[in-house]
Amino acid sequence: MLPVNWNIGSALPLHYSDVLRFVTAIALIRQSRWAVAIAYYWGLTLNIQAIVTPHPSMLVAPSVGFFLYWVLHIAVLVAPLVLVWGVGFRSKWRDFWRTYVLAIVWAILIMPMNALLGTNYGFVNHPPDGASLIDWLGPWPIYVVWMAVIAGILWAVMTWPWTLQQRSGRSARSSGAAQP
Image (tube, rainbow, N blue to C red; front, side, top):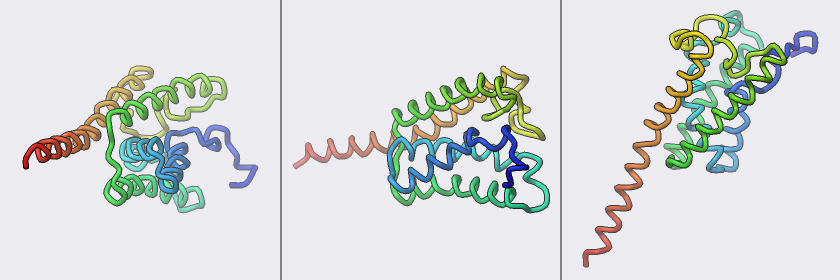
């Protein structure tokens, strides 16, 4: 946390999980639909990648960075669960598309910035250091395409049950209204 330890490759809040922390705070405080949707999709998928395969430096003796890494990643994992099962957020297809397009646009914007700064935010310019789930997806840039495809499929699966529930609720209301 001291200026002497500052590193452009890790200090800027440009990883998906870094952005997710700010967005999740907005989701919890304001419950804005866009923020809740991002917290839901990114928090329950992209964030889990960081928990399952953390950067090797997050597996060493505890430090402030170690503590913050784990607390914040767990917090943005728990928050969407609270928003869905506690507050009652139900995802719709427009939430899926808005969040998916935002994730793709973020990757497209961050790639040239990474190239310019020599960084790897979002892990879109090369795989992260250490073992990662990304290692199973092939070399760059193929793995970036696979990440987009897998995220799209996972997020569609996360959306589908809620849309079925909404549809069945409308069907029950409309059939109930027709009866005396």
